[in-house]
Structures are given as C-alpha cells and as structure tokens.
Length: 354
Ligand SMILES: Cc1ncc(COP(=O)(O)O)c(C=O)c1O
Image 1 (cartoon, protein in one colour):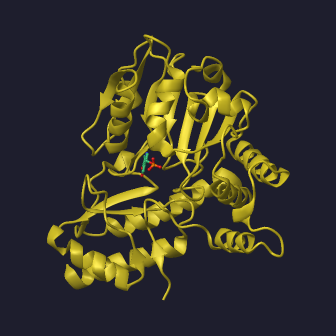
Image 2 (cartoon, rainbow, N blue to C red; image 1 turned 90 degrees about the vertical axis):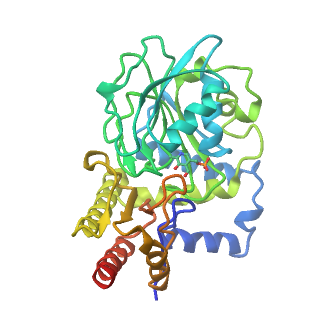
C-alpha cells in the first residue's frame, strides 16, 4: 500500500529528488554528499547552482540578494527587525494568526512594534484594513497562516513601506511579483527540502542600511558579503534545496508549480465541501492552497478518523495543537496522487460514519 504524508514539517519530497539524494549520499565512488567541506569548489558549485535556480524561478534582479542561512523562520522573527531597524525606528505587523502573532511578539522584544491589523483566525484582514504608519521601516506579513489555513493571494504596494514577509509556507509554490517586498524569508522544510536552511531574499536598499551590530552569522550584510559562508553553512540542507530548485525549474517553473498546487487544493476542498460531515473554518476568500484546515462536524470521531486514515496509508493529518481539528498540508512535494487518495478516504469515511 502507498503511504502519503500531509505533514506541515517535515513535508514530503518528490521521489526523484529523494532518489538523487540517496545516490549522492552513497557517493558513487567519490566522497559522500555528507562529507563535502563547505570551503571546497564542490560546495560552491552546489550553492551557486542553487542560487542561480532560485534567481531564475523568482525572476530576481541584481537589486535582490539571496542568502542561505540557518535558524529557521522563528529565528528570523527576531533577526529581521534586529538587522533592519535602526535606533528609534519601528515596524508595523499584521498579526492575524498564530505565526504572525509569534513573529510580532518576538520582534517586540528587540524592537518597536505596532500592530497594523488583527484577525479572529477565520479570515485575514485585507490590505485596505491595514493601518500602516507612513514612518514604519517595514510592514511584516505572514503570507500563509498555516495553523488556521489562511493565505494572502495579492500584495499591495505600500507607498514606500516595504513588506517583510514570512513566506515559509508558500515560498516557490506560485509566482509572486516582488516589487512590494523588501525582504522574504522561508524555512526550507515545507517547500524546498529539509530543515536546517532558511532562505532570505533581501532588497539591496534594506541590505545597505542593515545594522552592523548584529553578530556575523546572523548579520544579513555580513552573510551577503561572504556568500552565506561567514560560518559553516548547512551543506546538506543546501544540497537538498539545490535539487528541489532544479526539480521546480525542470517541472516548468512557478507557473507550473502554482497550477499543480491549485489542482491539489481544488481536489481536496471539493472533497471536503460535499455535504456537512466536514467543515472548513476559514472564510472561502482566504482559504489556503497549501495548508488546508478542516474539522469533523462530530469532533468525537476525530481519533477514529486519524486511526483509520493511517490504516489507509494517510499520515500526519492532525491540526496544529493551538487550533485543534485536522489539517492537510499540500506543499510542493505532495503529489496529486496523494491528494486523490485522501479525497477517496474522506468520502469513504463520511459514508461509513456519517
Ligand atoms: C508560517 C510559519 N512560519 C514560521 C514557522 C516556523 O518555522 P521554523 O520552525 O522553521 O522556525 C512555521 C512552522 O510551521 C510556519 O508555518
């Protein structure tokens, strides 16, 4: 029986990427991927190849730098304001879900933070409701709230206030026009590989004014100057990301990725919206294509649902503990086949238990 994971992190990887990693770890007569020193031309080839593919996929111009860092998005909650804010400056935060609230809370420990908009977990405040201060150094946005299953689909130009975005959940899942963004960060373990790597894409205007007081490994300016090698980078995670980036390019780029991801989401929401056995708390306009939150009308059936799903080869469907219920993550490595297996199971479970 096939086994499929819908985990939020670690997300599944495409079979061809996994096979290549296996071969590279074996080393095919040479050194294993796990034995490559970061100071060698071999590693620089991997890093530069990853950067070239990232640039091509995003359409990055010379005005953006791409950094391959450690720490995860959670570290960026503090490191972005530490790097980007100078004494006395403040930043606005859209705090509409679990992860954006965590970002705002962490930032408020190291910087002046103003909350520009909030939400109740079932919707995202639209840009016209953001209370953006003209003197904000940036506005922070979480583009997909994974716990609540909410996603922004459009990003406005904010009259000179750059958007700093936690794009962990939807990075490289769709094309995005970069003009409104000053900085984008994303942990790798959802859409481009394994944990240990955080991609930071930063506009040179923000980089030029970045604080020089942040310690080297955490300094965006120092890491940019040193091609992300101020200290030992996460070599393995970068090598896996390089393979994911190549896989995305060879698969038709971000338009094709968006089409695949939209089809998966449509399949799943269609299965959930048949009858009233399943419920999706997120308001229809803001429903995420990559993090689908749902619940059973009869919550007491949840343990049985999860048990029977595993028996059918469908894993990691439990919702984030902060909001409860159920969740299917549909990141880049999740296949249409997996979603169709889940849709069949949803229909079957509803028929038997409804
Ligand atoms: C939207 C979002 N931001 C940030 C994080 C935290 O990422 P990390 O654990 O890599 O710091 C998560 C984790 O699931 C997330 O969903």
